[in-house]
Image 1 (cartoon, rainbow, N blue to C red):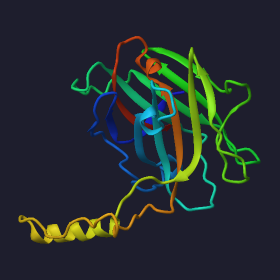
Image 2 (image 1 turned 90 degrees about the vertical axis):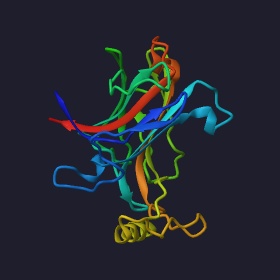
Image 3 (image 1 turned 180 degrees about the horizontal axis):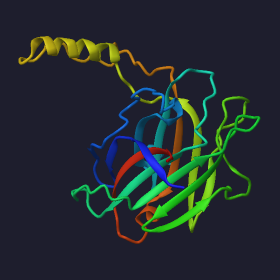
Length: 252
C-alpha cells in the first residue's frame, strides 16, 4: 500500500549540537480541519531534546521526540489516534550542526494505531526505517501489546519499552495538556497596530509573562513521546546532529 504524505510539521534542526529550523510545506501549529483532514490528522508542535538535559536522573545518550496532534482537545474528553494513518518522525543524519540541510530521510520512526478497544486503549506498531533497513515491533519488551494511555480509569500512564533490533525505545502515546504557549489576544493587537503603522514600526508589543494570556491553557493534545538511543539513530554513520521533522500520512 502506498502512502501520501499530507501533513508536515515544522522541521527542527536538532542537537546534539545546536538548534535551528528549516521551513517545509507544512501543517504549522494547528491549521484547522477540512473535509479531507480530520482533527486526528492535524499536527501541532514538534519537540526534540536530550533526555538527561530534562531529567538529570536519566542516563545520557537518549533523544526524546514529542509529537503533538489533535489540537484544541477539550478536557475530560477522549480523543484517539487515527487507525488509518502513519505518524512519523523523520531524521537526516549529520556530522556537524553547521552542515547543510538536505531533507534526506535517513531515519524514520513510525507509529501506527489500531482501533480503540472497550477500555479506550489503542495498540501500536512501532517501526524504524534506518538507511534502507527496517525493524518493527507490535509487542512490548515484556510481552503483550504496545498500548496507548486512555483517559478513563485511574491507571498510571503507560510507558512501553519496545525492542527494535538491539535497542530499547521507550514510548508513550495519549492525551496531555498542550505545552504550547501563545498569547493570541496580544498577537492580534500587535498585528493590527503594526499594519496600521506600516512602513513604520508599531508601538504595541508582547505582554510580560505575568499578564500574558495562554490561549492553549486547558486544551489537550494527543501526544506521541519516544525516547531513543542516539547510537540507534546514528546507525554507525558517526552522526552527532540530526535534522528532524514530523508528518502524518494516510493511504493513497
